Image (cartoon, rainbow, N blue to C red):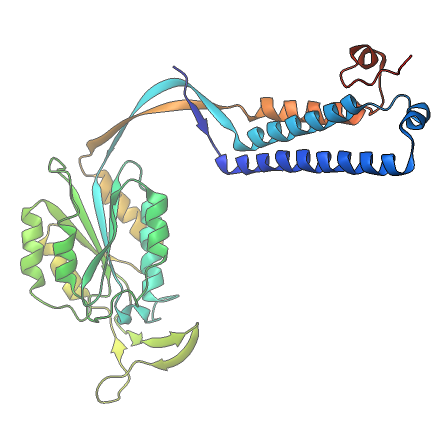
Length: 349
């Protein structure tokens, strides 16, 4: 059985123009009758304008309203399904844990560490196919940003809004991020579970190796992507894009934050993963793609999709035909209208 889907139903609001046109037409009709009665005798008006036709005026408005209705349906673009297909998706469950601590504001890598990290995740997502993804943010604590989903567009939208003000407590609670990631994998049969930690690796808290080992025992492979430089840089504090000051420590000395590769390498090694240098976006994307291609894919989704065909062209053609017809319709009577005498317009003998 064919199914109908509306592509842009918001354009149905154009239909509200039809009652407005009808009301304006009726008001104009009443106004014309009132003016005619005031200044011209009815019998005299018939002699002066013998071919005047109310029916033709009504017909023109009706044709115009039908044209607007057709135009509305054309913009809505109804689609009719003609065949069913079974689409199978195979992939890996991937969780991205993004460091949103203040140290990620350092500009030792352009434009800054956080924006670079978001660019890396976005480009990795763009290269995925049948996989599912989730996103976690963490600083002094970890929080879920996007649950496991195959909706990449929504995931990237939420990713773009992540910033260092999302967590009030500072620090880099990688352990909490790993623990939270373990709750994201909702498919027990999924053999390959991947966690990418994107961070500068600084100010980590807790026994990271122990948590990483526990994750590995649950079949989670952790890959770390280091963002920043070994030389490091100061942490700019900005307001509305304008630099206010650089972050200072308790001794009022300027804080210099550096990439801690050793921490990230240790986490990756413990959880059967590897460390990736995040300075070159293309290299990172290619390396991640190679890693994922080497993993066994699991079929975790099989849906029936209908192949829909656009139907807007029929309504658009109807609208154009009616608009042309409305132009050529004259408001005076024709012979066949006189014979119909629909509105008692025939002259008295």
